[in-house]
Image (cartoon, rainbow, N blue to C red; front, side):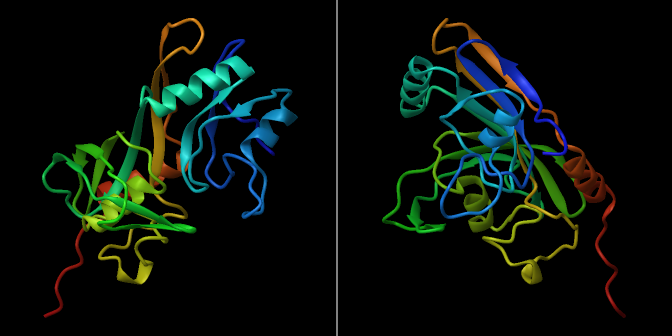
Length: 226
């Protein structure tokens, strides 16, 4: 890695890193490229994966540093005891300004889709800012299905800016350019698996998404041809 991975929190038991977009959260046989644990190892940090983000998504990723912490964190995930807050920029004006999506999600190989045969899913959101052609939202991820946020917003008719998996670029009603999906794991809240202390860790919005946000603020509808 040309730039070191920012460490947002670290103690003897857990570590939270700020993953850049384009880096795999964990090593996988299905995708080529460097992974976040490999990059951290280059910095002298040996971690045990318990949490992952999509490759194109940036932000907080939680790791264990001991087997005991791994087991406790895995139980925390199963009990949905981790608060995961995301930032996103969606196409269009999201209505209502605050609400939740409950579309059931079925994992279908490398993609996910909404299906009556899928698992129950919940994505809560609230509007932070409404721009002329896009909406800035804060998202509470209640369940953690594969590609849940991206799929839910696309299915609701508000695909995220830069979405190429669940909304084709040529079908986009707006033209705010982004090299990747405008989604960032903004905040993690959890009870420390060993000490019991409450932790809340934030990952600042990266420069590329700040640029996309500025573009959304200033992009207006094209005038109708006469």
